[in-house]
Image 1 (cartoon, helix red, strand yellow):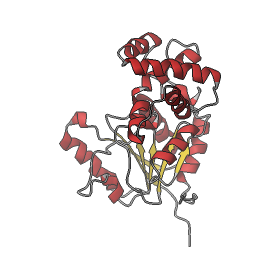
Image 2 (tube, rainbow, N blue to C red):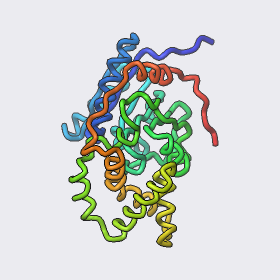
Image 3 (tube, one colour):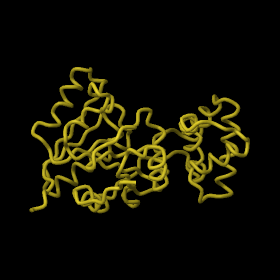
Length: 267
């Protein structure tokens, strides 16, 4: 049987898509077009009104694309009567690109996706996190590390604020969160190879704090500005500027996106 080639691609964003995500999708559209693909970019933001957002979303299947690429879980709130995202019922191979840390998404996919759905995040350590806490996601990978001109941590926290702004935000944290922030910084300085998830777990063990999995995930979310501040200070920058995208590397990544003959993780 002749292998199906990907020719028609829809790129989907909405008002929840991060600044970096929107920039990436613009460059991605350009690269795919240079590769000779038919690309349709759709913005289905609720800031334009519910009716217009729904009408835009409906354009995904007109005409039916070979691949759907979604940035930062755009339109995940548009769900069927079975409470699954509508694009799960489209029967279109889908790629989800996550430009923030996994715990920063307040609505995640807890349901099982089909075998043609893939998820790509920026950090390899976040691949492990997703596989641990969201086992229903079968195919999880990290984007090529040289797509951006800065460390993946910096890309995740670009446009999150300056050191001064983040310090002011963190002043409003509860005292126990400030304690965790101080422990986290010392832990990462001592053991920089630790993932943020493992470092935070060790911090909680240090203060003998026990919690459920959902509470732990909430703590990671609450610590998001503390993580951003740590990596800003670590790089000795005032703020992370918008990262530049290496189009040659992105072109190689696109070849991976377009290859539907990928191994499916069943465990």
